Image (cartoon, rainbow over the protein chains, first blue to last red):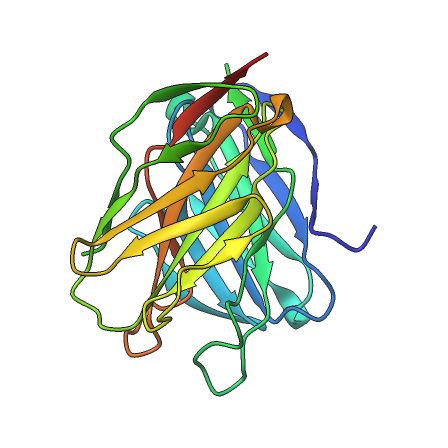
Length: 120
Length: 118
């Protein structure tokens, strides 16, 4: 399967614990996005990478959240000192963009299956 | 700031009938992209159709078409010949154009749950 993969698919943790999620984008995609989706809502943007550079972070991404994309391949999203309000589906998406910026075609974002986090 | 509004929390349609899901947007950008995604109960987001702001013709992809009315800032999704498998949550989303500093990320609406009855 050459789509976007995310691990784990489900994570249950106790409040105050740290959790880390992994996203493996489509191999040739240089852009990677993280979104958070709470029940009954649309996904909300968290952060964006172009290759290994984190170019944008949402205000939703508090200092307890950190994301990395070493070597411009897979990405990790870590949440420290989890709170019950962090319970959500965390979605990763990747797309192909030109190195100079702008768009290539529709630059469709391909989404992974998501990681559902439950904080008890 | 960009905003996407989907005013229909739920829609019902009879199998084989057509259905229109509404989406209005607000942006000050001249260049932007509009997307529709389907999210079944399993959770994955499935890309359906794309419309660029400068595209003169409405986008079509199989049974999906996008009724793009730029002056009204609306981008409604039309699904023809509905099938039982179309039952899902549908999201309209917008991407800011390349002129801005935040291009690439998608801003999503609240979604519309579509139920197809046999």
